[in-house]
Length: 171
Image (cartoon, rainbow, N blue to C red; front, side, top):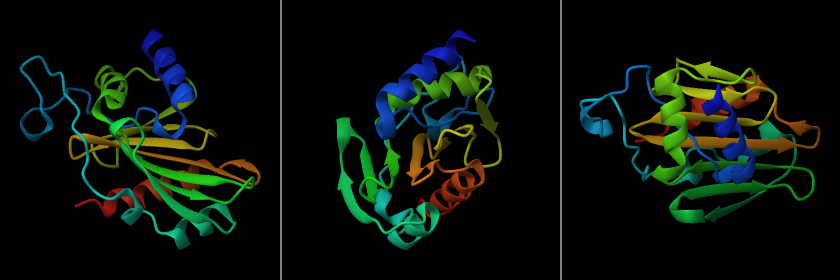
């Protein structure tokens, strides 16, 4: 439970550059940087996050016109879709150190009451229910989507559809 609280605090503090990723309950080895103890060392994803969700898809999800902008905060990579004061959507490939708390939470199956464990996308992940944030572990790294529209955080169904689309486009 304590890990879930720490993870929630990190997510709140980091916004769209917060931790994202996932691990299966037992950890993994090989290409995911696993070791004999089941711990997993996250890696940096290398795809262009602006190729994972299009401007048109961001506009449809938010229900507003947006402008696309790229950024590389703290070593990660983010594609932002800004709709002014009406909303934004960010697709982020966070740096590995931001992925570690989530990898651990997934390995220990330790989630708060506001986090839904995702088991059917990538190598697992979590949805911050009603929070406009979803994160998955995929290809040994993390992928995070944050979205707030004119009426607040996007609903969980929209967030899940966005992360499914983004993961399907990873090389």
